[in-house]
Length: 310
Image: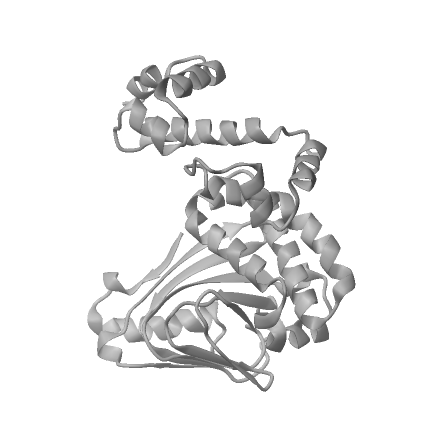
């Protein structure tokens, strides 16, 4: 969903549109746009159940929320750091943006954000009441968030979401993925705040959906297998197999089914490619192996399926 794209507006109206938009989505009281004549912004939002993933491109600006806002649901913004220069201040703590590191802001509470240059980044908006964490725990987490043992796990999960945001938002499992992301957010905040008792349950609750996102992101990798998947989620292969069995899934067959579905979608809607090229793209060892598995699954050959949808 495209929320704003100033390139569709006359140049003279763009700065005002940016100010209006940020007052709505960031609850900003003050917005100062650097170099208004060259200002630009585009935002796209993707709903994953109760959370929302937002992609932002914007020129330099300053945002300030000067008072507590009770006219909108209390929302936490989890921002995946980019290489652009930016800093954020809230509750007396100033955090400088670092590429690949997640920072957070309570949008309804007073805060300041400086974007010193153009930025292309991602933000996850999470309803605070969905976290089931006391307010003091959430606020205690922010200064220590960058050094949390779960920071890398959480940042990796957000990056995986951003690579397939549009597809995931249209998936029937989007609400479950959103709930898993909430659980992982609860885990990283609890870890940063020193609330260890809640971390284990939250991590377990989010594990299978995180594995699902990881597998979908790496379907074209011929090295994708139990060891790779387990290592990426800091669990043993034995635990991985037990987790899949508890869900009634056989890991290898589940991965093949995901690859077949991706190939079927490409054959029907993607650029026209040879069957051999499609088989290679989705990590099937040979075209004949791909064709055999495809026919077993869907009752038609890949070529017949491709022709029927062209």
